[in-house]
Length: 326
Ligand code: NAD
Image 1 (cartoon, helix red, strand yellow):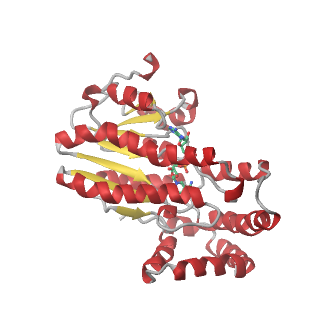
Image 2 (spheres, protein in one colour):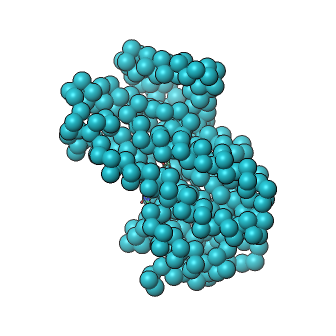
Image 3 (tube, rainbow, N blue to C red):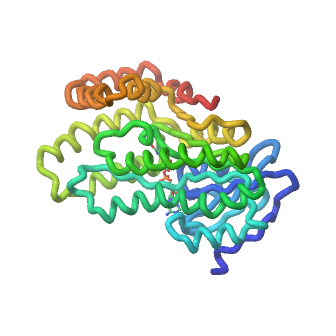
């Protein structure tokens, strides 16, 4: 159990906010941790957590001088009650000013081929993992009448995407949970807000591609496998390539978010605003379902051409334009 114990504040100065982030060994979590720890005004002491400290090297290297000063490491598995409790108990006075729920896993593929156990793992991490964290930290925040809880959701928490059924469901569940809890927390001066990235180039994307290559999709019929592999996947790769943001883009939004009075929902990629708007334009939902169907099955090849054209026309400058922290 000793490996869970961290003594804080090792390098914390008075007035510094304690920020705890989950899932910091890679991707968005790693970049948020580094950016906050390197804050020029040194406003934060970051506790960057991960399941296995053997995976700390990339983070430690990126943090440079900040490691041991404004950045500490701790073990935390969001799927374990014991691990979450031990981590929070190891923090001085259990005091967390800002909790950033970033840890999450993806799941993509034909529903017929995914065992229920695998789906439960997604909910255990993306949904119950966040709730487990909030339950551990929220009572102290309520008592102190202050604190900020951030949840890294996804545009897939606002709009379902074909073949991402269970992942989208886990993020939708999170959105509903947050929408409900935010009202109560406001009474205690605790802010709850969400960051909703579109596609981001992280291990998430790499894991998805690798997964698809390895899997056979038992249980799914040949037509479904064809639509998944030859229609959905090429579109998804195109979309990632053209509209994908970097983990730094998301970290920049999150840093602004930590410092200011945040909005409840924060999409990081304005390309997705019209997609979400479609949903609110037609409360029956028919418009979104048919628009997505049309885009995927009728306009697939056209989309590929437009995406390729966009990629060359914009030469990557699109990515920097898609950041909207305010
Ligand atoms: P990533 O795979 O690089 O990072 C996820 C991190 O969560 C990893 O470090 C992983 O080890 C950690 N993790 C997984 N299970 C955990 C557990 N039980 N306990 C603690 N840590 C655990 O991917 P990412 O893109 O950086 O994902 C971060 C968040 O962003 C996720 O919540 C994801 O749903 C969300 N998101 C990602 C994208 C994208 O396209 N990459 C888009 C929208 C939202």
